[in-house]
Length: 217
Image (tube, rainbow, N blue to C red):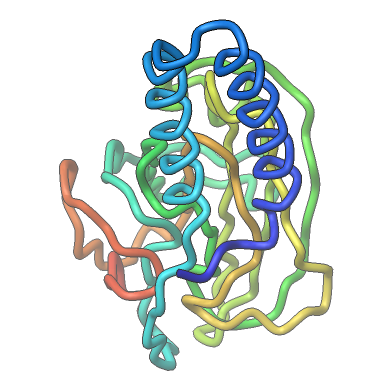
């Protein structure tokens, strides 16, 4: 199983901690150390599972908007986006549990025209205000259909590390990775009002594969 590059620091700390606790528990508790070690080894297995990088056959997309992450659609509504678009648009929000793949992918193809990191709070990721008050990043892409599409990585109550690798003037390719969020969070995508929405609240999404909307050329 391939692991994401963001796993390195977390796995080193986890393995060293488990090795230390294991050595102490074996020395003092002998066979009873299994009571401590089995849960710790299960936790280590979950960390490996969290940082997995599954193979995805990514197709080329021009008009399609693909799911930027694995997760569950929790919001589809008209909102006013005041950072980049400064206009009404459709917000599609996808919540990621700690068991989802947490690779963040471009929802559309085009050119990166904006990026910014915002420090903030750590409200639970499904809270409506988390989009504007939590720690987050904002990225905007001018799509191949000549629309501006904004998307945000949002930290949650558990997630405390957001990374994004894109830079202004980069070529965005729908479905390809641009960042990562650790341990539960949310992605918001802001689309033009005339976008055809192809998903509904409650849908489970597979990042880079599922088409969630289609923009008019």
